[in-house]
Amino acid sequence: MKIIIAGAGEVGFHLAKLLSYESQEIVLIDNNRESLKYAENHLDIRIIHGNALSLSLLNDAGVKNSDLFIAVTSEESLNITLSALAKQLGCKRTIARISNIEFISSKDKVSFKDIGVDELISPEDLAANEIQQLLDQSAFFNNRKFDDGALTLIGTTLEAEAAFIGKTVKEAASVFQDIHFMPIAIQRKGTQFSIIPRGDSVFEEGDDVFFITLEEGVEEIYKLTGKVKTPIKNVMILGGGKIAFNTARKLSEKKIKVSLIEQNKEKAIELADKLSDVMVINGDGRNLELLEEENLNSMDAFISVTGNSETNIMSCLMASSKNINKTIALVENMDYFKLSHSIGIDNLINKKLLAANTIFRYIRRGEVVDITTLNNLDVEILEFIVKNTSKVANLKVKDIDFPRTAIIGGVIKEGKGIIALGDYIILPDDRVVVCCLPEAVEKVESLFS
Image (tube, rainbow, N blue to C red; front, side, top):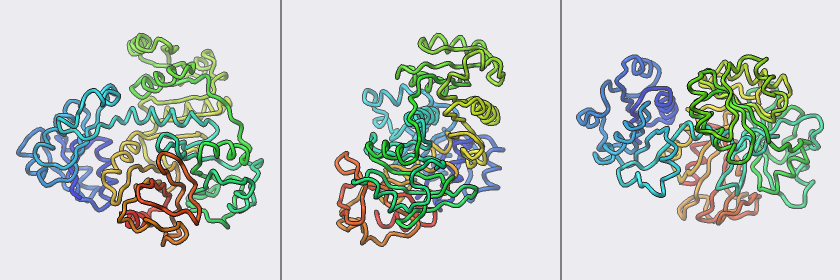
């Protein structure tokens, strides 16, 4: 697959890096020589220095024969223009990075496809949506919904009071008459190794366990893990950027009380004008006295989304020390992201990775319609649409030649979630959610292609 990326900034470089691992033919365009030089020295890709708006440059990049054009420069209008040009010059599909979420919410009124932009992606909006999902089930982490909640992905750390510590997956499932959830990944305490669980896998104290569950299964997991369901009523947000704004707006619309702290006075005043239902405070969020004055101790969740990863991590650690139940930090450094909640923070989010996951569905073979990764685990969650020609079509789950390092978490049939056990027959048009280790991705994709 030939992919052209315009913009070698953080998002563009990260995409090029991930896609180069997929053995794709990548061309990276930017007018910043330093950014391109770093990419050229670290990635097996072709680079082109210059203005991507140049028609001759786009032709030199091979846009006519390209499968995908991704515009992720820092300028929203440029990305839309480049995508439209690429489509007219012959590129099969185009994606534009934007920051104005009005474009996304108004896609039913304004057809960007008519001008050549197949998909709009806002990393900031993706991050705000991710935060909202994480708050929906405050006792868990990595909350992710598939098909409007037909299936839900949640993660939790097994504490001593969890009812199924020392039991196998099969024994834990036998507690309930009907199966409404499926464990899909385990990470042992103190290790960096991911386990795809089987029936004889034993749960241990300190395990980070990830489940695919139906709506009714969430309550069962609460019961089994001993977690307490605490509603989120009061949230403090540190930072006044686009992610903070979008998050505060979404939460306040759900009648959650939000306090937002922004250090820049002019920006704080601007935010206060736009967010009438949010308490906007002008001050330094790193100041513990200020946070305590603004009732930090009464907050149900603390979200730090400033432009500085270290500030976000340290402020969340400070909030955790004050017994805040839920902490979420925005990080740009991928090394930090891999540490996840093991450093004492419930969730770390990375907008580059969120954007990459969204774009990946255009790259994967088979009928991948969704993809995500899990904090601190080297596993991928893929959602496939089964075709008539798929090797898995019309087979029972137990009869599929599935790799040991992959597992079917659930199936969505006609909008309804199903926990698919061995005798379930996979049919065309089923949407199948699969968890697998990296070495199994190619084999899994071939089963659904």
